[in-house]
Amino acid sequence: MAGKMLYPELFKALERVRWNLDHDVPWASFDAAKLSDEQALTIKMNAITEWAALPATEMFLRDNRNDSDFCAFMSVWFFEEQKHALTLIEYLKRFRPEMVPTEAELHAVRFEFDPAPPLETLMMHFCGEIRLNHWYRCAAEWHTEPVIKKIYDLISRDEARHGGAYLRYMKKALANGGDDVKAAFAKIGLLMASAGRSSKPLHPTNLHVNQQLFPKDTVQSKLPDPEWLEFWLDEQIRFDRDWEKKVVDMILLNLSKLFGRPIKTLQELNRYRRELRTAAATPA
Image 1 (cartoon, rainbow, N blue to C red):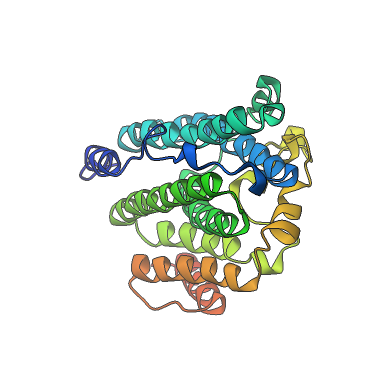
Image 2: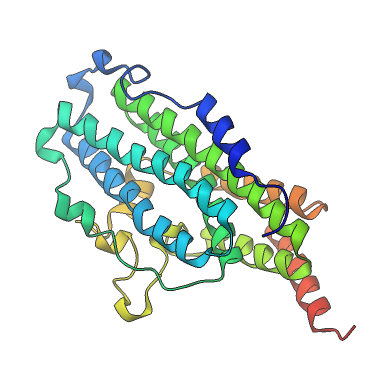
């Protein structure tokens, strides 16, 4: 993809704000009375889910073979996402060793994703980072134990920065492409912001990615409890309509900046998507 390489700048920016597992996590503040078995199990499930950055990275490298700039950035993204899994596992090792995921449980989420259009995948993961930032912020409020509250705060900030990095690559794609790029982003943006109309959470780890393995072809389907995510969101951290509105508003705000026009509702985004589709179908 033509244009200025973003990886060197993003590497430096993320390096400057990177937190340290030993020094920035207040391990000595652990309060055993404030960690229930129920809460510890959710930490295990999130650790396994974060491990799915491994197959996602393999997918990104395969489907973006012609974009060395983006693939180089994957080195940073992959490192930080695996660090999230490692930190959650480290927490369990110290305070709930019987809950530590086994290597087999971690390996279960490593399976091949079908090839997909790179632009659509980029937009999907951009929205996924926004959603994960809000999920983890909500989880930090739900937890009562101070160390895990801090860990979720740290990793939620990483997810927000990752979303910002993906946005930079989306802007680069837009500068190199035309309305077809906008159409790809608008289509996936509408899908990912429409979780309120879906029976399942819309996040890359809960979407079907391998036709041959269907229906067990989502990351969540590979967890020890495939139904865990919905229960965590609905019954435990209570990710309600107010939280969901924050996610949708953030997606729409960023798409407004990306497209250079105000888009405040899903209806406006859908209208813009139809405009792009009509323009593409109209002969020059």
